Image (cartoon, rainbow, N blue to C red):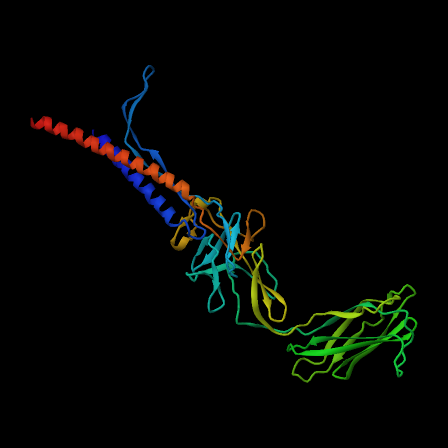
Length: 408
C-alpha cells in the first residue's frame, strides 16, 4: 500500500518538474537564440518479491519514476534580420565566446554593441566579445582569442603617397607638339591629388607632349612648381619601351610633413596606338586620416571598418567555440553557458571554416522553441500529473478503509 503512495508521489514530482521546464520554454519563446529544454524520465528501483528461477519469471514491483535528464536541444533557430550594425547570427554550429575578465562564457545570442571605451560587448551585460584583433590591418586567428574593439572615436593615421599609376593610350596619329599659337601636335594633361605623411592633399598636374614619332616627354608640377620630368618611348607596335630609370617625382613640402615626398610613377600601362586619348592617372596609394563611419561583419566574422577617407580597415575577427558535447554545457544567467566536465574544453575557430558555421550580419537567431509541441507536451504532462495524484488519492481511500476496519 505504501509503495503506491510513494510511486504516486514520484509521478507528481517528476510531472511538476516537466511542467516547470515547459513553462520556462514558453516564457522564452521570444528570447533571442534561446535553446529549448526537454525532460526525460526513467523508472525507479524495483523491489523483487520473488527471484527468477528455471521455471518462473521474477516478480518485481516498481517504486515509481524519476527525472533522467533535462537536456538542452541545440537546434538551429530562424535567422531574423534586424538592421542593427552589431547584431550577428550564427548559421550552423558554434557559439560566440564572451569574457567577464576572469572566465569564458558561451552564447548563440549575437546582440552586440560598443561600450564607451570602444570594446565590443554583449548587450546588457558588459561581457567582452572574444576574437582575434588585427595588427596593422592583418588578422592572425590562432591561439586563445582576446577582447575585440571597435574604436569609433579613434582617428586612423594618414598614409603618404608612394606610387601613382598611369594607364591609357596616347594617340599615334598626332604629330610632334608645337606650342603655337595655336598649339598643335600630341598633348595630354591629367591631374590627381597625392597625400603627404600628415594626410594633406597636393594636386599633381602631369602633361605629356610628343617630341618625336615614338617619344613623349612628361613633366609634373605642383602649384606651378616643377616636381619631375622625363620621357617615354614606344616600339613600332605601340608598346612601351621600359624606361631605364623608373620615373618619379619629388615634392618639397612646407606643411610639417616628411619632405621631400617621393612618388614613383607606374607608366607600364601606357600605349601609343592610333586612336583616341585615354591616358589617365587611375590610382595613387596615399590617403588622408579618417574616422570610422560604418562597420561591416563578413560571413567569416571579420569586422571591417569603412573610414571617412574611403579606406577599409580590418579590425578583427569574431571567434566561435565548439564542444565535443554541447548538451554538457551548463546554463547560467542571461542565456549564456559555461563549460563543464561533461562538455569538454572549448575548441576555438573562425566562422565558415571546417565545422564552424558562418555568421550573418545585422541579424539575430530566434528562439528554437516549438510552440505547438510545447502545448501538446503541457497537456500530456497535466494528464500524467492528474493520474499520479489519483493514485495517491486512491491509496489514501484504501488506507482509510483499513483504519475503519481496525476501529470497527
